[in-house]
Structure formats: structure tokens, C-alpha cells
Length: 533
Image (cartoon, rainbow, N blue to C red; front, side, top):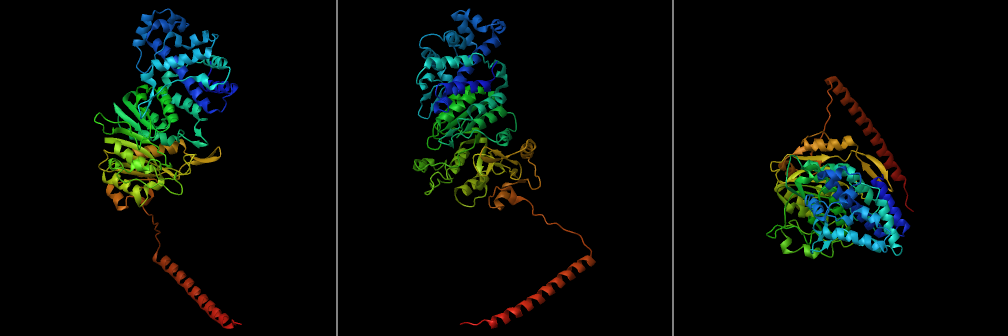
């Protein structure tokens, strides 16, 4: 039996054999085929849970063929809403048996399109304009010739792999597979387009938001990327106790998030995945048209982005409440410079519900800036009593950026204060990752950060617990280091020891004064010898 990583390698090999190696379309093919296999496996898995005849059958496909159309439809009616609906001709075994048909590529493509059509309401991602992005498309169109052979090769790679044994593993298993699947495709013209690979401590920090058992809560990420942060948050809460909402300007990111939701038993949230610009066209709204507020928000917003094309759309009267601290100017020398991220922070603050909590990755410079939009945002966090804590991370915690980052925790219910400020910048070890150096935290260091934060604990030279008044007194600084006590070491000595030390100081001072007078006399003597010609 093939492993899942081996399957992905096999699919890459098939693409390479038909001229698609390292092609931009290779990513689309592999992710869609992976989802195709998942869909074709999930329904039989569900059927076996409720039908003992199919569960005991040595060849479940053959046993299922004996069912009448009415009996089969009855089985489908018992499936969970998140399970893909398939007809008998959609199973992989049917494709395998019919792979020698003329124009098999058309048969293969049509099978995937039929699955997508039957499950449009379950698996489609929407744009902010209301258009639906289907689950599958014509895969063979990317091959110039030998399309039938290409599709046969894919079917033969899939036929010996089953996902059934790992459905119960959900998040922990699929997180590894997902990272392996997309690690080669997370680039666009040499630049990262989806922030997918997070340090463990960053993703593990989100449970700090979940301090008690909750249910029927909403979770949001306004720049979701592939959804790594949302998946960790949903896993901490319980996938059946939360609904995911997201928006991202990248269609690739939205497709990756859809894949992650499917693999993590969060299919019910796919209709809430929106491709669009959160700042100019926030999509999620209540019935009265007001922007929807959320119980939990996580985000690693882009720090650098050229927003010159739509800056005027942000600086409008109707946006003044949402962007209370103002709209930054686009840097003239470098439009893609670090100016946009405060807009995302304001957007997140605006969308927090009355008891909402948020965790946001910010440049560490944000927590001490003494002027401009950043300062106004910090003041609002304190005056509205919504700051829960800040953790300053080591440098190079992200291998892809040299920007120092901190994690900002907000909690609208934290009205009494008790704010944890932590300086974890001295932790970690430096390792080489490709051409970049990266700081990696040891497991015990990760646990120290999380346990200290959750315990509201003050640790010497590491963390402090302060009030809103304390922060006002420190000019609204969120830097832990500015609250650490200044340590002065005292040494007890006798009166005789003190007298001896003072006598030594006096003698040294007298000697230096004597040397100074000698030097002064010599300088004056040499000056008189100078002659100007």
C-alpha cells in the first residue's frame, strides 16, 4: 500500500513524464487529484460506518453494485452533510475498469466535473462578487498530447492508495501531508505568496485564546492564506464547536484553505471562504448589512504591500470608524514598504465581538512606536481595555523575513487589566534553512512561553504582569523590557574596609592630578617652540 507522501511524489513524476514538471499547472493537478482521491474515499468510509454488509464485504465496490438505485439513494441520505455525494460511476474502481475506453481523458475529466457539480453547495469557494470557484476542472487540458495516457497514469497511481485508515487522525495527520504537498508551490516569481510555514510556538500560541470550553463560536482570519492559523485555533476549540470565516485576496490561497478545511473536518465552513480584498471590500456581514463581528480572530497580516491602487478607497468617510487611527501614506520611494499592516490591525479590532479575542502577528516596532498610527492604535487598545498581552519573539523566527515580530493578544473582556508582557527574544537556537538562518525554539522554551502566559506569571527578566495604568505611565509602551526592575547590587563592608577603599581612591586621584600638571607644563613648553615661517 502506498503512503500519502509517496502518492504525491508519484503524481509529480507523472506530471514530469508528460511535460509538466515544475510547471505552474502541476500544483493545480496534484491538489485536485489529491482531493479527488479524498472524495472518492470519504463516501465509502462513511457508508461502512452505517452499513454492516458493506463493512464486512471483501470487495466493497462489488457489494455496492448489487444495491438498487433506491437503496443507494437511501444510503446517501444518511451521510453527513460534509461528505461528498458520488454516483457509482464516480468511484475510482469504475474509472480503473474503464480506462481503455476511447478518449478516456474526456471520461476522466467529466467524472471530476460531475463530482464538482453534484457537490457545488458543499465545496465551492466564492469571490466577493458572488462567483463560485468549483472544486475541479478539466485536468487533462494542461497536457498538449497523450492526454488519455496521462489520465490513465493518474488513475493507476491512485488505485492502490486508501485514506480510510487515517480519517480518524484528522488534524495532526493532515497537517504533515498538507505541508509536504504545498512546500514546492508556495512561490510566485520567486516571492512567497502564502505564509504557510509558521514556527510551532506561533501556531501553538493560539490556544492561549481559548481559556474555557466554548461552543457555536465564530473564528475569522482576514488574510487567511492556506488557513494554518485557523486550523490550529479550530483544533483547540473543537471542529464541531466553531465555524470558520475567512477572506484573502489570493485565489491560490483560497483554494489551499478549501483543501485544508476538507482535510480537517471543517467542510461546513467552506461557504464562508471568500476570495477578495478585505480592506476595500469586506465580505462577511450580518442580516442588517453591518460588518459581522467574530468571537475569535487570528491573523498574520502582510507587513509589506503596495496599496497605492486603492489607498483612496480606504480613506473615505464611511471607513473612518473602522480605520479610526487613520490611513498611512504610501511610501513614495518604495510603495511596497512597511506601511499597510496598521490597517489590518484596525480592521481586526473593529470586528471583535463584545467578548471577542484575537491574536495578531505584528512587527516588534509596532509595540514601541511613539508617534503616528501605531501609537494611536496602542492608545485605543488601552483606553478601550482590550489588551490581553504581548509576546516579543526572537529575531529570524520566520526564515523568510528578517523582521522581528511580536504576537499581540486582545481580549474585549479583559477590562480589569492583568496584562502579560513577555520578552522571549533571547530564547532559541540558530539553524540554517536553505540560504536563510532561522531561530528555532526548543520544545521546553515553547512550553515556557505558553505556560507563563496562561498562568499570568511574572518571571525575572522574562515577563511582567501590568495594569492599564502601568502602561499609561510608560507612555503606552508594550515592550516588556521597559517594565523590568533595574537591579542594583549592594555589598556589605565594614567601616574600616570603606575607609581603606576611599583612601585608595583619593591616592589614585592625587596621582592623576600630579601627572596632569606635569603634562600641562610640557604642552605649554612645546607650544613656545613652534615657529611660523
